[in-house]
Image (tube, rainbow, N blue to C red; front, side, top):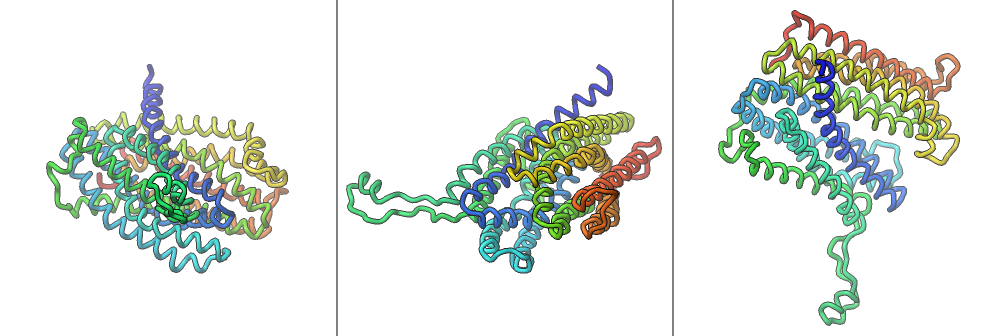
Amino acid sequence: MSTTQSDFKQLLLLAAPLLVGQLAIIGLSITDIVLSGHVSRNDLAGVMLGATLFDLPMMFVLGIFIASSSLAGRLHGRGDREGVNRHFQNSLWLALPIGFLAALAVVLMRLYVLPQLDAATPVKAVTSAYLVPMAGSALLLPLVMALRTTLDATGHPRIAMAFNLGGFFANIPLDYLFINGISISAATINALLNTELTHSFVLLAPLGGAGCGWATLLVIALIILGELVYIHRADHLDFLHIHRRLRRPDWRDIGKIFTLGAPMGGAILAEAGFFHVIPLMVAQLGTLALAAHAVAMSFDMTMFMVPLALAQALTIKTAHLLGAEKTLSARQLALNGIKLGLLIGLLQAVFVFFIRARVSQLYTADLAVAGVATSLLLIAAGIRIFDALHIVGTGIMRGYGDTSATLIISVAAFWLLGAPLAWWAASGNHWFTVSAIESVWLAILTAVICASAMSLTRVSRLIAPDPPKSAPG
C-alpha cells in the first residue's frame, strides 16, 4: 500500500466516527425542529429562532476546544501521558469560566437581542421560554467539548461518537415528553388504587416547543455524566483519570489553550456569522427567494459536515506526527489530506449536480421554490469543491498550531469580500444575466474561492522545508 493510500485510509477511519458524532449532535436540533413543528407553526418558528440565537455564541466556544485538540494531539504523539492528563484537566477547568460566559451570552441574547427582532409575539414567547434551559446547555457544552476533543485527540473518537448517538436517540422521547407533558387519567388512577378521583394527575405540564430546550439540557448533562463515568471505569483510559490525582488549575497552560483557541473561535464565528447574515440580505428579495435559499443552504450545510470531519481528523493526525517530531511525515500527510479533500469536494459536486432537482422537491412541494432552489444548488456544487479545500486547509493549520491565520482568512474572505458582494447583489445588482438570489450565491462562491486560495497558500508555507514558527504547542 502506497503512502498516499495509507494516509487516505487512516484519515477516513478517523473521520468516520467524527462525522457520525457531529451528525448526532446536529440531530438534536433537527429532532427539536421536527417535533415542535407538530405542535404549531409558532412553536416551530420559535424553536428555530432560538436555536439560531443559541448557536452564534457557541461558535466561538466550539473553536476554542477544537483548537485545543492540537495541543492534546501533540502530547499524545510524543507519548507524554502525564502531559495529556494535565491538559485534559486544564481543559475542564477552562470549560467552567467559558461555560459561564456562554450562558451569559445566551441570557443577553434572550433579554436584549430577541426583543429587537421582527418576529410575531407568540413566536418570541416560544423562543424566550426555549432559551431559558438553553442557557444551562451553554453552561455545560464546553465540558462536552473538552471531553470530546481529548478523547478524539488521544485516538478514542468512537467513545464520544457512541455517547453522542446515545444522546440523539434519548432526545427523541424526551422531546416528546417535555412537549406534550405527562399525565395520568383519573380512570387509570381509579382502576389502580380503587379510588373515585374525577381529575387527571399531571406529572409534567406540557411545555410545547420550549420543552425541547429542557430535553436538550437533560441530554447534555447525561452525556457529560456518562463520559466521565466511562473514562474513570475504563482501564485503557487510566491516563485520563481525575479522581486519582485532581490537579489545581495551571493558569499558564489554560492561557495557552485559550490563546490558541480564541482565534479559531473567532474564525468559526466570523464564517458562521456571515452565513447567518445572508438570510437577512435575502429577505428583501421576497418570500420565494428566502425559501429557496433556506432549502439550498440546509442541504449544503449537511454536505459540509463531511469535509469538516476530514479536517478534524487532519488536525489530530498532524498534531500526533508533529508531537513525535516526524515533520516530513506531517508534511506528506498534509499534502495527501489536501488531495483527499479535493477528491471529496469533486465527488460532492458531481453528486449535487445530478440530484439537485430531486433534493429541491424533497424539501418542498412548491414548484416555484423548488425551481429556484435547484438553480442555487448548481452553484452549491461549485462551492462544495472550494469549501472542501478551505476546510481541509484550516484543519492542517490547526494541527500546526497556526490558528491566527484562520481568523485573518475568515474575516478577509467572508466579511471584507463576501459580505459586501452579497449585499451589492441583494440590492438588485445582478451578475451577468442571473437573478438577484443567484447573484448572492455567486458572491458566496467568490468568498469561498478566496478563502480556499488563502488557506492553501498558508498551508504551503507551513509545510515548506523551513516553515515559519507555529503557535505554541
